[in-house]
Image (tube, rainbow, N blue to C red; front, side, top):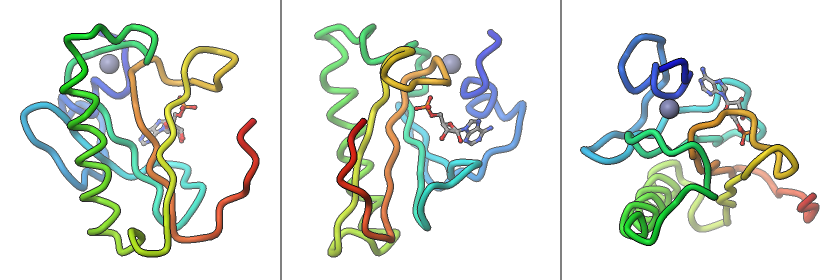
Length: 113
Ligand code: AMP
Ligand code: ZN
């Protein structure tokens, strides 16, 4: 499949991987917007948030749990951080493989869109 994030999962292109388990993988964003900018993705190819089914609820819950653990590990948990999922063209999604952005390490703007 011609999906850049699936290629990182498969080890076909390099990624700065900081965490992985059976269901998810997390790596550093190639174009970081803050000192901590991680991408957390399911290993299963799900194109976007809009493609999640109810059966995926445990998976998305697990992704949030992993994000929180990584925020603690990165040392940004106390001061605060942001988890973002962009969905679709107008939501600003560029890579069509569901992903969460974990951002922190500076005061983020209040701007949401
Ligand atoms: P989005 O706009 O929500 O689809 O975000 C896609 C994110 O993936 C952007 O922040 C990119 O910098 C990041 N990205 C794209 N290609 C790579 C890559 N090969 N390794 C790490 N991050 C990437
Ligand atoms: Zn994919």
